[in-house]
Image (cartoon, rainbow, N blue to C red; front, top):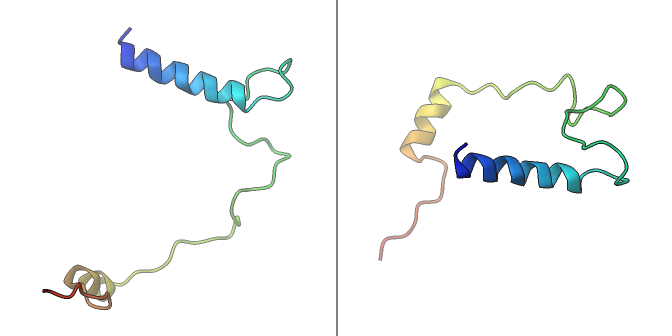
Length: 69
């Protein structure tokens, strides 16, 4: 096993152990359960971005330009 992979797994396990309370419970390394509220609204949709907005952002329009000295 590669040492960086082992170190990564050990770090994750340490984090999981820290998140477990009380110590007698199993390690909490899973996702949310059905009894926990969702982290964000379930009906939330991503913003709609138009091609014009993308082009504008690529040109830097709408952002403050740094003053050149």
